[in-house]
Length: 322
View 1 (cartoon, one colour):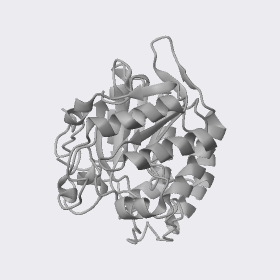
View 2 (cartoon, helix red, strand yellow):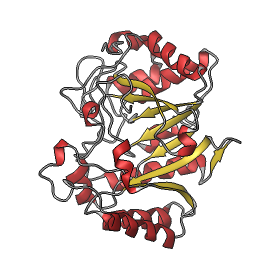
View 3 (cartoon, one colour):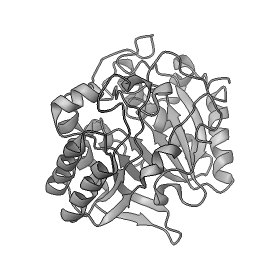
């Protein structure tokens, strides 16, 4: 497949002064690499100032209010500011060997998204956007200039700067962050980021400040505005998951909408990482569900234990999830 190849030089004309400043000496994410992403210095994420999109597709596997009946138009970006060793999107989140996606220019990209929206899909999701916020913003502006106003979803691993999120308040309708860990040593070992727990918590607080605990839905149950927090239970780390839930209840709100996921499956990077080299046990997941109920979480979703069979994308395909 051909890539969305609008590179840094081409995209420079679409960024405003603030976005250019952020990319010229990059401090977009908590890594603060200070890389000049217009001139070949790509920092921790390995991404320049171009589009860097791996896939644009309709995805029906998200939470019910996110996907709705028609699915969501998800935009999957290359690279990431985390290095989660168990990442299900590892084909595109880390170089090398990342497959390319369909399309060839910014205009073709926005045209493809517009075509999907005009078919009845009502939302656009930006997946792993923390290191490509300027790209997210120019896409949103271009769609609005076309007269399209879908629900925009910020689907993030949670390793975001709150000051950048403040600047996204006029762009994003629904925040969909992960909150992975509360123990720095676990965050360092599994995602290469010891400061993840405190950084993600600050980011979620900012999202909560903007949206509150409610997830506002239309008469068809589709989310139009709000915050939905995700947590993936990992094999051998049920105790960490329980700590995460307690932290959310204590410092954010037990009224927040939460998606407690059981969809973990071991990828090739964790073959020698016991206990991540095995599936999640039912008793592990059930213990976390019980704690969620005990803490008074009353809004959200749990998954079936066989959900791991449905979340194995292949980004060499035009439709990675089919």
